[in-house]
Figure: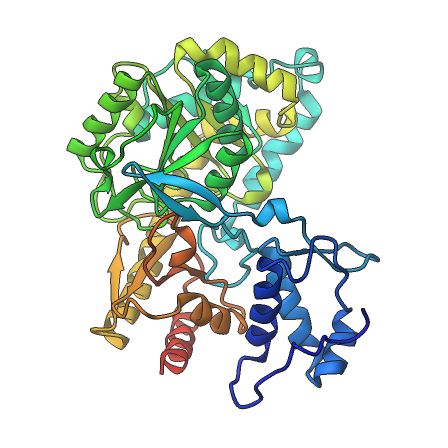
Length: 468
């Protein structure tokens, strides 16, 4: 296929030519009119046939690729992805079936991308010094096949940090080092599904799309559990006993809500009665603005049903590739074996350097400084939205973390279209509707880590133009 098909025509007066190409191709892929493996024209050929700039075609293809509809690699033709990756599945909510689309995981890159720290403030000098020192002085046991759960120095340093800042209660043997929270979620899901013999996993709705994919890929039937401004409400779910329950209780992703104490106790009791594992993803709770957060769910767990997951990708830099899980004692042996079997590990040089970085107080100092900066940027973003869009937007969260959820009061608004137009200018925003399994609500998720004054002003102006 070297040119655009006859049915792919553009409305020149309708604007958003990229969106028109994207939606037209996506619709026919979903309907099966463009089957798996079908070869699409090159972006150059498509642009020439439609009479648009090549960048317009490239952007449309990039959206389709990032959402999993098409696939391509350097030097290879662009083709429609396999249908299995896009087949809707039936899920349950309150005992009823709901239609679930496989979540989009587009690569939203831009100044206001949610969930990423400002790496321009990374403490390069201190980190380089620790890394260089450890590279020269690692002991022999660190240069061999170290424990699959990580070197003891780092496990002890992490435990001291999360005990002091998040109220986590554990022993170093319960701490396991991994390259990402995704690796931790995947390991815990597969271990619990195998151990319990069940196939059900409960998950917050709205919730983290990557976690939903990981649970599904592990073989779980994901059941959505509604969230509101008090967090997940397990009293509103009915169905099979879950093998595990995935939550972000301290700073719910994406809404920013904090799970209330009554809801925390109800969640712990549900996990205890069902003999389930709660996976507590505490992804960015080191950043809190205004008041000290309540303790991690793990810290009030007396039945040992919680596995606490954290990461340094949100705290320091994604490129470090260091995360950890604090698992219940009864799960240590199986989790260790799972890590050993899958070969999931972090470089011992990185681990040792990070242990020194934490033990010398560098992490605490960095967090104090960044909390102040991020608090100012969060306040700046909220102030802009409240002053410029009074009555049209509702803000949730804002008391911590690296992102801010904003809802459209007009529930018929197309947040995906708004985000697509904004991201054409490089903002990296995310549509709130993409986080839901069941019935969704429109809005935008903003990253605040780089919300400098001039950038926020431009963002406000562009949003006003898009919303009209």
